Image (cartoon, rainbow, N blue to C red; front, side):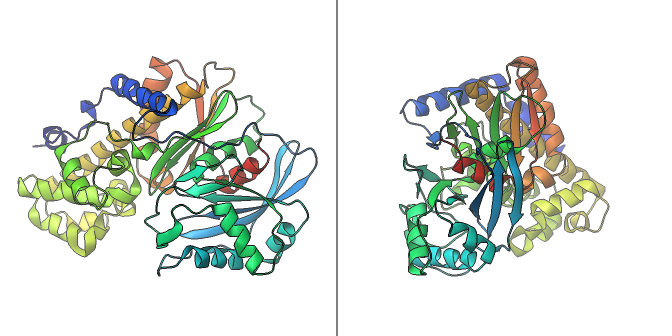
Length: 425
C-alpha cells in the first residue's frame, strides 16, 4: 500500500479536506469569537489604532523576547517609514534552563538590554518610545501594555501568567537605577509581522497587511479596515478534520484537546506526529519496523524538521532518515508520507490565511493587493511547503474568492513591526 492510501485510511490525507467548507467553518468561528461568543480562536485586538509615520526622524528602542533569544535594536523611523535598524547583541531568554520567578525574569532582561550602551542611551532620552514584542499569547489592554494570557512551554517562569509585560519591565529598569519614563507598547510576534510590512517601501499601494507565523508554532494576524490589528491565535483552532493518529498524538501530550491545528502542522510538533505515524505504519507492516526503530531512537531526533527537509532534498544522501531506509520501498513510503503531510499543512494554512484576507477586506483589487508577511523557520526551511502553500492559495484565495495578495519575507520583521506599533494610535 502507498503512503497516500495509508494516510487516507487513517483520515490524514489532504484530499479529505474540502477547502470551501472548512473556510466557511473557520470564518464562522472568527465571527462568533469576535462578537464575544465561544470558540477556540482568540481574536484579540491589539488596541493600537492607525499607523502614524513619524513627522521627523525618530529613534525607538525595541526588544523581541522570543522562546530562545532576546533580541534588541535601535530603529530609526521617519515620514517615509523605517530608515535604519541597528540590531544589538542577542542573549538567551531567561528561564530556558532554570526555573525563575517573574521578577527575576524581567530583571535579567533589563540587565541584558541595558548593558548595551546604544540601547541604554536611546531608552534614557526624554519621551523615548519603547516597543516590546513578547512572542507568546497576550491579552493587550487599552494602555498599550499586555498581560501574559497563558504560560510559554519554552520558558520556566511559573508566575508569569497574569503579569503585565510593560509594567514589569519598567519596574525592572527602576530597580537597576535606570530612567523608566518611556512610553511602552507591548505586542506579540503575529501582530509584529503584520505591522512589519508597513515599514517596507516597494512603491506599490497595498489594501491591507497580514502577518503569518509558521515556525515552531503557527499564528495569524490582520489589520481591520479601521486600522486595528487582530491577533487570531489561529493555532488554537480545533475543528479541522483530523485523523485517528492525530487524535492519538494529541492524547499523548499534556495539553490534550488544545491547539489542534498547531499540532497538525507546525514545526514544534512535526517530529512527534511523524513518529506516531511511522510507528503505526510499522505495526501495520507498511514500513520496516527496523526503519522506525532507528528513527524513533533518541526521542525521534531523526524526525526533526531539518532532517526531513534534508531527506526530501536528497533521499539517497547520508542523512539520518536516508540511512534508516532498509529498502527502496521504505524510502518511497517516507518520501510520499512527508510530501502528503506537507500538502495537508499547506492546504490548512491557506484556509486560515484566506479567511484573514476576507475579514481584513484586503486584496479585493489587483491594483492594491494585500501584503502578507510570512515569518518563521518552518516557512523558510520546510522542503516544498511554500510551493504547495502558493498553489493552495492560488486555488482558494485567488480563483475561488477573487483575492489578490503578495507573500513577502521581511528582514528583521519582528523588530520593524514592534517599531511601527510604537507609532500606531
